[in-house]
Length: 369
Image: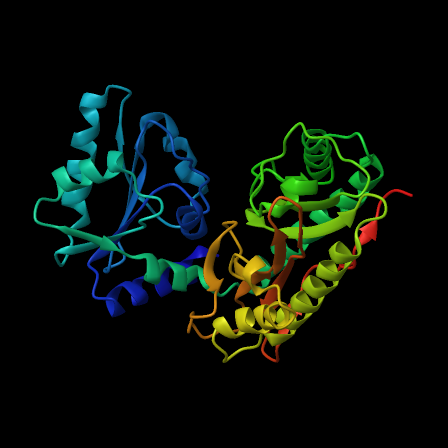
């Protein structure tokens, strides 16, 4: 599975005039090797040069994982004594045989811990961002990746539907979020969720990234639930908004506007257009209705092995959408101190247009009499 990905990586490194790349534990390392390492106090680094040599620096206790690697890897291990760690990096750097002076890194993942060992092992090497190279490698999903995301959406939707009867006035945001997480895991989500669910009611729903609190739901609240599931290393990320009993007419109006914006944003996506067109389509609906200042974030973000990854759907983004790219469409209106609405769906670009992977009803649903 990972050999074609590896070959594409080598082509991209050469095109970017990089001598190689250093990759920390995280989505890209697993994407290339299938190995599920995690960041910890012991450094793990995958080193690749443009000739195709792949080396892994890792603790001796983790060496058994290499048997499951999708790529042939040379291993340089160290013991629990930190005094042995630099030696492993020195040996790996020597074996890597870089053909040039620049090594790409993932700026969102490489830590100072690993960087210092690499710098000591490779004096004279310049460490530069390989973000564009690696994002381009993972941005277009193959059918197997899309199938995993489709299942992650299915699990997330089933979990929310199972949770809805639990939601009622007097329930706290924390209690609802906990119930939702339990249902996600019970229905098949991997435990490494894309994020802990956002459950925000009443004034808290006006904060796009609210943290579930002890606040209890009350009649007249809007309730925003933003959640996702994980399946085979791929994520879903959805949002729906609910009414707790009858709500103000203005709240129903902004819910309808956000629904229109969501529809416009989902319809805008197709291969060959700038990502920014999706943002402009959704944002235009809200701005035309006079609520533009209350839509305070981009329309969406890429989705896959990370909850947030390229492409990003903001107006100025000229990145051209291509088949296989996956992203969210999640317009919102947030009235400070009062209430907010967001509706979020997951999209895949197809050869002919785009497909919405999620299909839960988007209209404002009243959950109690």
